[in-house]
Image (cartoon, rainbow, N blue to C red; front, side, top):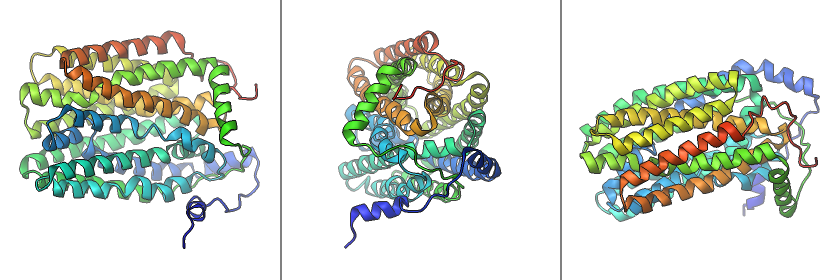
Amino acid sequence: MIRPKLMLRWLLQVDQPVPARNEAQVEAEIERNYRWNYWVNLLDGATFWFGASFISSATIVPLFVSKLSDSPVAIGVTAVIAQGSWYLPQLFTANLVERLPRKKPVVVNLGFFTERLPLFFMILAAFLAVRTPLAALLLFLVAYACHGVGAGLIATAWQDLIARCFPVARRGRFFGTTMFVGAGMGALSASFSAWLLDSYAFPTNFVIVFAIATASIMVSWVFIALTREPAQPVTTPRRSGRQYWAELRTIVRGDVNFRHFLIARWTYALGSMGIGFVTVAAIQRWQVADRTVGLFTLMYLIGQTIGNLTFGFLADRFGHKLSLEVSAGLAAVAYVLAWLVPSPGWFFVIFVLLGMNLGATIVSGILIVMEFAAPDKRPTYAGLTNTTVGIVSSLAPLIGTSLVGVSYGLLFALGGVVNLVGLLLLRFWVREPRLAGERPFAPTD
């Protein structure tokens, strides 16, 4: 009989010895493997985002769900999953991840089962769409949630793996270039998805679309498995759950700049309340065709491509805070346009702006947290940020669902205002951690 704890220890390779080495030796290993890690992680990101474009949470997924149900609640639940599932689990895994000398086994071994396998059930849901639409909807939502939560379970380990493999002054350009290539491939694939949605009848078109997404994301798993991680001895002592939660309170109370960042980041996340309804608003108001929704995906990915590369290089030079400020401004403009535009053609511009917003959020929203924390505290800071942001991100679509009952205009107007408030908080209340002139806060200070 297989014991779950033993299986987990085997998956995470907890018992493998870690060679003793000093900081200089670790840095030398990072430099020695830099090119290899750059290319395999770039290929991982490129193939992952290529596949993810076929299950875009802003366009493809809302369209599929709208085919199965005309209830705004179904769209709202989908948006909750899309915006919260990756974020929510991270704080609950950070304590374990901090005490692992190797992060790669979490990402590769555990991630195969938690993040990748649920994708196959999305294909099955598309097969069932005509015969049993309610069962297909439930299966799809469960699979979509498992995929998102599964990615969240390994997210702190993945973020620390990237931080270990790439020096701070080169993370932005690596991440930006990787997302640029991935979103660029996704932008090309969006044209293909538009053709697929138009050329094949429902649900065959979605079976093909979800199958391509699954195949590409499985290929990305092969590339991430080739990463050469610089294993490091564990310096974090074992802590009980009570001790760990007490440490979190110490961090939030003692690290004032980080606390200000959290509040600004929560506001910024709340501004995403309308993202899941932009496509549905265009469909209901202008009766746009499925092919047009595929082109919306193309515009969204073009915007993300521009944002990934631009904000990655901008952040390496000026810091990630500025990138997030510009991103919040772009989101505010996009929502105001969604509220006021007189014709459906404007939605192409709106999706470019929302894509640029996503590009900055992916690059700078992840990497800025690494700069608030000392190296041994990165998983905790990442988990604390991302889980609390995930809670707000999960509430945001629920607020959006209630506002849709009044009008889409009210939803988009409020989304624009909240993003503007987030911009002001980031600009005037948070210091760029790289330029603050302070060492990272330590919970024992």
